[in-house]
Image (cartoon, rainbow, N blue to C red; front, top):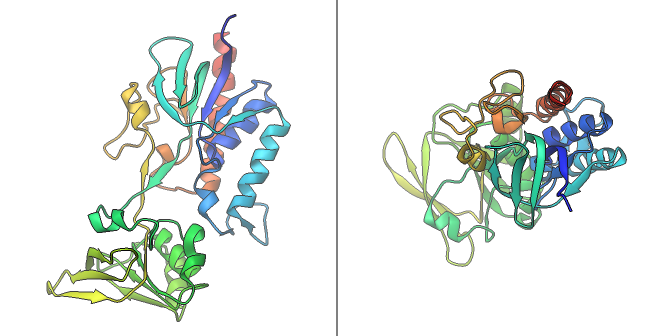
Length: 309
């Protein structure tokens, strides 16, 4: 029996992937979404989303993604919780390998997003899940009444810190530069919160503790002075790395930071392979911009298939 060849396979299930699936399904392309083991993307780790159009009172990130999944399934999208492990774009149909099976498709939409960066300290990795986290909404509940550190200086750090004040006794934002690069509104929201303190121009040297976080050793970058902050938690919010290595290995062009390069609208350098969302967007990284790119990618796929049928 011949193996099924999908019109399009969408890799990733965040706002970009699911919006692409919605448009592809409504165009009767019968898309397959390879969602990964944690479907829903980064919004599954987000609390209230206030800047996605259509929700004047805001909406919880997981609820938004659950609604998107229901919507795409309604139009006939197949969603599988499988991780892609390899891609072969040398011949048509393209071959995608997951941890469970192999799939063939005429077109591919890469919407794999980006993964959280870490400080790369041995002590940090040793205590991951024991007081060290990169997801405030996942783990904030466990830090009731505790003193915690948020590492970072961008919007993510401000958002994480502000959310953590719901549980923590104090939250201190530590940033390696003197200036914080967060947007003015996010920075002001954090500055106006009486539970949040700021330490700029400082480097985190070590996470202290054996079985759980007991403190952080930091260095003042100006004076070189080292000190210990007696805290019980560390949340790392220092940016993301695009999940594109598998595709770069298969010949997809990426830039110096690893983001997939767009050649024409949503086309990659390989004909028939398209991209959407944070895996190619180091600038905006918003749910709504990712969704918009997902729409564009699906429309480009539909046009491509029409021209090549």
